[in-house]
Length: 185
Image 1 (cartoon, rainbow, N blue to C red):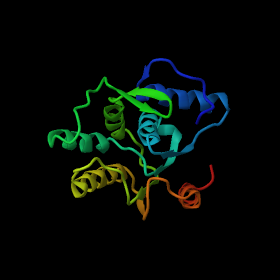
Image 2: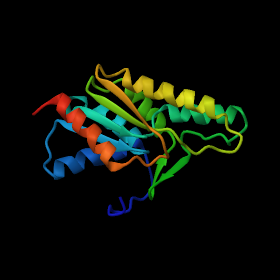
Image 3: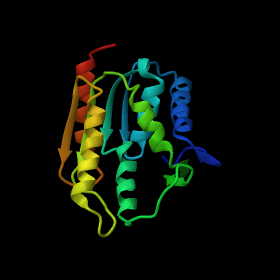
Image 4: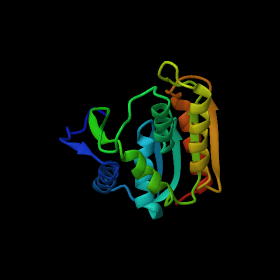
């Protein structure tokens, strides 16, 4: 992050997934891959896994965005807490600008995610707009995690008390667990 070339224009999630594929090819890193994705990268990881299912051996999500995030947004719109967001509206993330439709791209890709070990590391604290119904937001978010893990016969959720940034040692432990499950390749 921060070392990539600037990208002009508004991206789709598929653009980022294609960039990941090109990077892996250019670096001569051959599949199978264990995809590790944090925050917004969860959407890109789903899109990548949906398009390259045969190349993915496992996935670890670090308090990552999922398609259900747009369900939370829709609920907040319906309650008048936030303004509506259209699919072509821009969504800035770490210096790149995506179309909000990246959530829908990831939702479609979720159906093609392979049955591989999947871990979701969830932070228990999150930011919300004033007046937001936190319990309902948690319920929708949990449903999104459950939907993701349902694609894996070896899915696991690990909760961490604290904010969005999960300690690297916890991430390393979960990546090692997934690597142990898939074995040598």
